[in-house]
Amino acid sequence: MLRAAVGSYVLLGTRSTEGPLVAWGGAMLLSAWGLYLILRIGPLNKPATSRDKWFMDPFVWVVGVSLVLGIYVWVRIAQNVWATAVQLGAIGVVEVFLIVATVVVGLLMMLAEWVAPPAFFQVLGFKRFPVFILLVGWAMIASALPVSVGYHDVRFVTVAANSAAPATLDRAETPTSLLVRWLQHLPSGSFGPGPSGARRGIPLVLVSTAGGGVKAAYWTSLVLDCVLQQRPVAPPCRDRASGRDETDQVLAGSGASGGSFGLATYVAHAARSLPDPTDGENWVAARLGGDYLAAELAWEVAVELPRAFMRFSPGMDRAEVSERAWQQSWESGPWTPSWGHATWSTSPAEDHGPMTEGFFAQWERGGSPGGRPVPLLLLNGTSVANGCRFNTSALDGNGNDHGAPPGQAPVAPCPSNDAVEGAPPPDPVLSATIDLEDFLCGVGDERRVDVRLSSAVMLSARFPFVSPSGRIRACGAPQQATFVVDGGYLDNSGAASI
Image 1 (cartoon, one colour):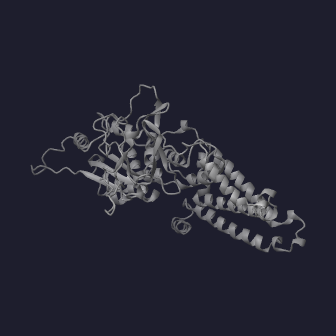
Image 2: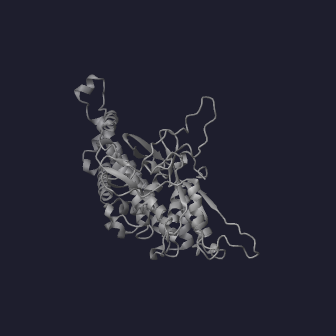
Image 3: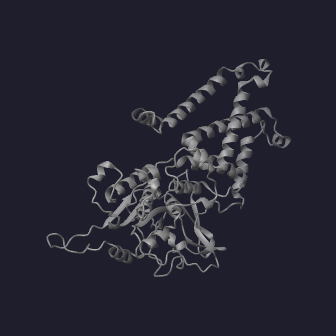
């Protein structure tokens, strides 16, 4: 990353936004070498008799400065993870974490070596204080405590259980109803004869987008803009543009991971009736050109790692941190380093923009009279328990609804991994699918009516280790749950659903 940034900086000159990344990366490397030299040649390596003044030892100063730095960054992350992480960058977050972790582990090792174990441990045969055994035991006990069990629950748009408000999705689509809706929303004159009087062919476009992080998202939106938009942002595409928005020719788009992010971003852009002044010259860069990894990493190492031992509830998990970073890119332009973001708090009241819109609400509005037609989105995730496809879509993918409203039909067992012994693995077909719309129901004192567009994307883009699996409690049996991870586990091409 640093080498690529240096290349951009040299080519683009001092006005390049990659300059701070080059400077920060170089400073991190120099600081690591500097710390090594200080500790290598300092009084720490002298005989114990010559180290009578502890406050003159560079090790003490390094430990003190590192702890102060770590505490300061931790407080800033707790106050506003987005503004702090975007200043540090993903590299800086990892660097600060490694510095603090090295110091803490070193202090624990010193504790194990210099402090005699209590009598109880001595009876058990321990000659050193069993610091790490105690930490592992503590973590195991803490993980079994019934505290914050729903911490990684998927965010739904909910109403009170006794509310009369209906679910946003009236009926899940079938392949037949989907095709009828697409035909009804074609531009007038589509079925008229061509210039020669012969019947014209009507293009029906199906899109599949592979996973690959934010790079896949960026290229997905850029290619769709190039092929379908009236005024593409990429100069080579403008000469070949048709002069009209051809998004209505797309029947459905299926994606996994970053491809799903790009699909949803393009549809959110195409569904708007008026241009947004924050789009700038390149709306793709404005919405997908930011650093979305740093905040999630920062929350993971600064909040959720300590939470594994202390089981406190910080109010949101790192999946929500990413979702809200995506949302904010539609409000203040590119999610790039700026102290102007420092006033943005963790209040959900500040959730605005197209990515906070209901996923099913967008689909219903596109089918209403006067609405801008949008393609059916098939955002593919993977169910952890059985390896089934998790279909975030308005389509009844498993055919289990039989005309019932969303959430009314029982969730049928998924057969995808019930293979006969000795038989080849089953194909990941749509019948081996769990549908999100089947979970639009009442659970506890709330009733799910929709899911935000950003949360729908996250159900397909929960990248291993970086994002947690999302828990969705079952309708009628809240003690049962489905856990959803990245769609790339099952099919990273996004093509199987199409």
